[in-house]
Image (cartoon, rainbow, N blue to C red; front, side, top):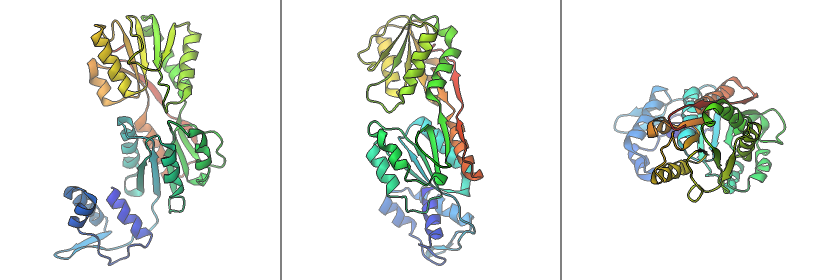
Length: 323
């Protein structure tokens, strides 16, 4: 799809015109280290849409320019992960061929986030769809985001205060969501002596997750603690843990086994963000999670319908054997 979009965008921008010859499959393969099958699939899709044509023995040529300008989207994620892939797949599938997507990852690095946006403000994008999470420097993100025309802006996953104008937002209400999820799990949690949130000191996760956890524990009189490092934090029989990071889940399972503590009986685990692996790991890890597929579908629908709403994304609990 990156190949398809790059060629379609070049035609829309008149960088390629009808009759221009496209790079050969071998040239793209060698210059960009792309598999032959991927290139052929891209060219076949462009041929199916009557955008290019192949001339036996000569190569591929621009055949026509699509009528009507498609939405052209800059999609900017903080990282690659299983749940981010769900968002991307649902987003691109819902849009289909109705739009082109330029996809970038900034690895929670504010400086890279800033560079990607500022370097592309003068490009002909109809929408900037962004997820804003940083390890550091995030306090300055609003100054960068304000450079994007509000009418082109769609913010995903986290609310950002201080933006004016009509823009769209599909967000997680982190404090409310974890509070409501734990309230729904209260009867099962009463089996445990202490509720522990693993919240690393150096993290991109919103502090509001911690606020919702503390609010629940105070309201329902749960004994609790917040630990920053599960590799050294105490694991005792009767503990129920909430982990945010996948690496912490691995360490928690590993250390529990080393201590001969049975998960789901001696210790409980609640893992943030649903993935397919958690459905089968240890016969099922209980999760609390936003609906990542719905997040992607809604963002795409906002583009197709030109909506500027601000809505919270659904959040749910999946009860499994780890609790």
